[in-house]
Length: 314
Image (cartoon, rainbow, N blue to C red):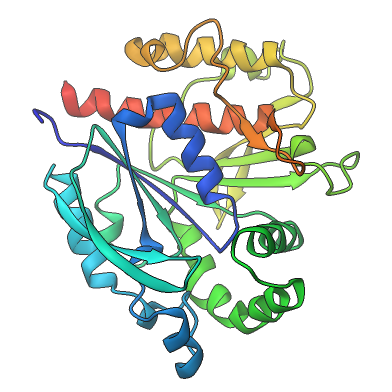
């Protein structure tokens, strides 16, 4: 590897949508070009031990943060790691695996921004912050279908974890370059992931694409479904990109063209004619559907990854 990998962080609470976002970005970049690391694998205790000790997986003391930081440093410099594996189905640990980083590394999980050393390892940092009632729906759906819990068990687990969420997970929001919130619009009634709106807080910690030509004060020719404005976050000015659930494929492709033109080789990953892999989600009955707010979110994050690659390779 002649250049170091580009490292993207995606942090959020349990069932905040980290894996969905990660998979979509990996599909856009080409899965053969992406190494995905889940920090859940660095739990210090298995499920039985956590229950006996009364500690949750969200607590820093329940995770080998020092090893995560060490491995991030190795991956960033293109070196391989021997990564532990936590099996969510069994609640136990599987044998570790040898991981050699590819061109892009996506690190997703609960505590990825917990230390200064971790934060310094990323080129782009994303935080997912869905409303708690929506995250509850997602967590019940995931844990009852894929992890063998009952709905009552999931709700009790969330109740017990609330202190750790408030004190250890949500504070990491302050370190993100992009904060993503998917939320139901008035017409969605919280039932359909396809009708979710997206709100993206774009902090000036990294340079964001110039969208003022199509979304600026002089006229927004994409219509009211996509809006760009100014806001304040934690007392500081930020750009706010809002995408409604009824955004269309034509609007996705228009923004895609803007981003592709700004990063010359972005077209190798997202076709100027539109990338059908963007925004794919699995519906409640198992069918594959497409959410355009998710598509635009994936596209913007991919833009930042490739922008960082451009800086490294210059």
